[in-house]
Amino acid sequence: MKLAHIILSLALPAALLAAEAESYVEHFDTIYNSLTVERRGSVVELRARARGGEALESAVDLKDPLMPIVAYTRTLYAGLFIQSKPQRVLMIGLGGAGFHRLFTAAYPEALLQTVELDPKVYDLCRERMQFKPTDKTPVTLMDGRMFVKRNREKWDWLILDAFRGGFVPPHLKTEEFYRECAARLSDRGVFISNLHATTELFYSDIKTIQAVFPQVVLFETTGRGNVIACAVKYREPNIVDSAKWPAAESLQRPHFAGRLDLAEIRKERIAIPTGRMRNAKVLSDDFAPVEFLDALKANNADGRDK
Image 1 (cartoon, rainbow, N blue to C red):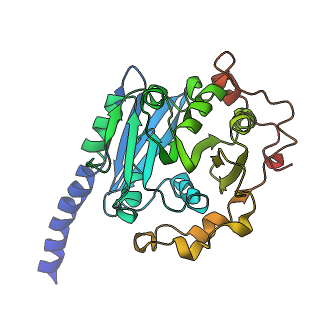
Image 2: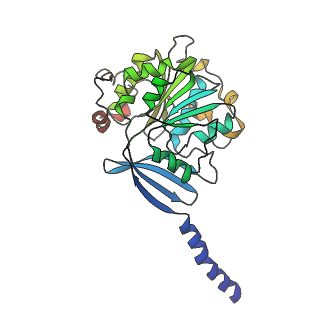
Image 3: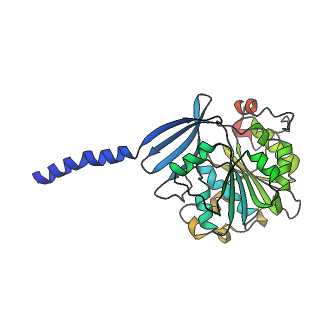
């Protein structure tokens, strides 16, 4: 017994050292972002520092890279209820590729084209978060709006999830930009946008999206302050009536098991807060006070559905 105790006591420091080696915090400043990368065990987080705090942009569990760690990345799959066969997807904003891994495993024949502004984000995504781009998951380093302007291809899903220092750049929030996005959608394509739901910007976001897209459906990531807007450029068929959506079970993929519950995502559907939007302004290239509105906390967050 004494020998066993000695061996155990000698082994403990080595185990602690190994755990220590797997944990770190690094800070990087670029012309676009102030970034923090932190690893705790097998989980690596990418955060943006702004306004005296940090906003979690992405995370990956290196033991199970397919698992969506950041809750709203699950809600992005609400797009399946609108367009269930996403063969061509454009994503503006790479982050740590928290969405990419599960999507490409579930839809191996689909193209997932990503546009990322900050080269350092791309480097950290590959070096710290072990993202390996392929010919099915190419990444272009460019401003997202510029890519949409120049690229003439059509997309089944166009996902807007671009943040700079914790807020979305104003030129990616305007009616003009959304019209450019609508022009890049396939006939039955869906525009999917990650919105902050805790500030006054939320109401202008929705009003601006509605100025372009005749049908909009919202899904709230429970308790996280994120709302995912799904919008289409057509009036028929009706996507607002959830009774006409495909059954969650019919959309399940083997890789979703234990990672993504579409039946639960379906329950995240919320009403459009028409009452709170009466005084909201449509954002345009000439009027887009995004940072100001995003700094104003919603006075009545519980009244968003009123």
